[in-house]
Amino acid sequence: MSKSIRVKLKERSYDIIIEYNALNKASDHLNNFISNRKCFIVSDSNVFPLYGREVISAVFKASGINPDYYVFDAGEKSKNLQTVENIYHAVLKSELDRSSVIIALGGGVVGDIAGFVAATYMRGIDYIQIPTTLLSMVDSSVGGKTGVDMPEGKNLIGAFWQPKLVLIDNSVLKTLPSREVKGGLAEVIKYGVIFDLIFFDKINDNIEYINSMDAEFYSYLISSCCRLKAEIVAKDEEEHGLRAILNYGHTFGHAIEKIAGFGAYIHGEAISVGMLMAGELACQLNMMDRDQLNKIIAVLKKLDMCVKAEGITGAAMLKAMKSDKKTKRDNVCFILPRDIGNVEIISGVDRNLVIKAIKKFS
Ligand code: GLY
Image (cartoon, helix red, strand yellow):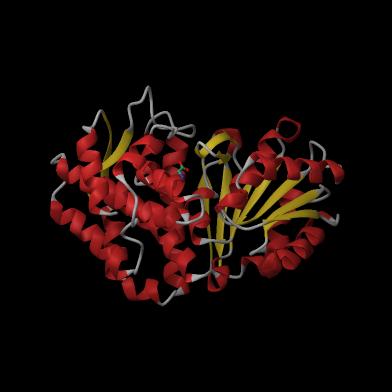
């Protein structure tokens, strides 16, 4: 069954299509967007060997032109300006012009880099997201955040640039390593905590379907997250307020990724621990009942997700958090829950409380 969700952004509106085996019929889905247009596929060394040929054939069938492609080494370590420059050279060599289309085939790193290239090449060309990890299906492929990391911190260089289509084939999750699935589940649970208690309870009540990779339940999870994200992005595309709640767990999480060295903890693992640190801080500030935090911890444990960032110190975390994009004039901002389903943006928190919250989960 195919589900379609509209991201409503006036002339920049687009659809997210979620369909089991969508890649088999990718040319039908792509046809409207790429017919007679030169396409260029950006992918990584994990995904391209699995799905590259299928997508090349679909693009050829839909556009009538054989696409070129660029494949970089998989992992967060590639998410930098050097990879972007390499892709610029490749697309120039392929003679892409302003009517060409970039297709991102892969997880969050691929989508962020390919999107950034599309946002900046010849002052912006169209791109399509074909996310292949749970994390990118439920979060990063939707909403137009593109960019790369700097040694100083995550996602510090980037642009808002919306895709023309997000095509999700959740059958590809069967080839996704379990570590990556669990990383993606951190972002799924995030939506429940920030926005939707009923959704959180549904996750809690269906742990066995999640652990057994039930395709129908995953389709429900993905479409629910995309619906919530589409609603938030439509209200606050460029994160002037509401959209910041999507960063729950990310102030702590980005710092964990940076301190441990990009790639030591995958993004979703760092976010999983970051959500608990934020939850602990909320408890210490008497914003949230400890029962609620225990409920979140219990779900993460039942899904065998990362709940500790061993060896990370509070002092290093505080230093790393200062370079986070959300930090304003040295004042670190946190997205903290009041209850499951309801968060607030808080700044000016006593650093000793922050360190205490970090200690609890490190
Ligand atoms: N991943 C957070 C956002 O898209 O705003």
